[in-house]
Length: 243
Image 1 (tube, one colour):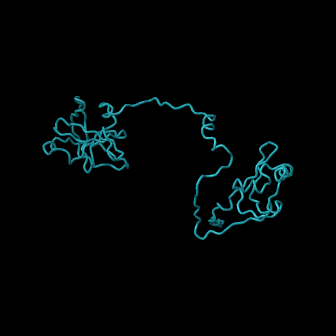
Image 2 (cartoon, rainbow, N blue to C red):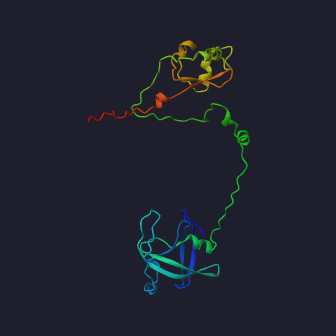
Image 3 (cartoon, helix red, strand yellow):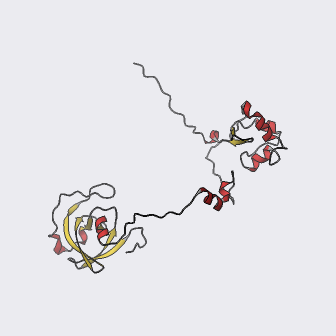
């Protein structure tokens, strides 16, 4: 059996009555065997038997069936008697799922072996994927939509009272792991283009920042791009139906 350049599986099989070898398509999705009318030798055309059976193609549309023939397939020095439908305008002969099994062209395996992978294995093998926010190596390009306009939000972000003390510890230079909040946010690419003013003034520029309390002594400061990613298409107004 060979595949050639295409992804189709084909196999040459001798048809004993025709004394001719045809290249069949191995199609596990086919319910019946099919042979194009153009490949039937003229002396066998009169032997085609009529049928009322409807055969559909892969797209669900019915095929033009001329009838059917009883033929003998020779494969690996063994003979197999099968019925094959004769189809007009068919590209190539097709073997059905049942005939594929009879000729032992494919073996059905009901057992699939999967490697034992757990979270610990994946995390140890790819440590860079589990280090909070990361960055891509190399250079990249960002394509903006034509006519896109910059967006800035200047409204202050309200902070819940229970998070005030945690926020104060987070933005103090002596308690921040990276020196101060601005350096940390810029380093992690959460905030870009932040002005060099005081942290308190900078905090007024990012009301699209959210505070994520992780039930610990520290909090996460996250930036959401919902204003940039929002859909500007407006839904049509709903007018009441007056009767």
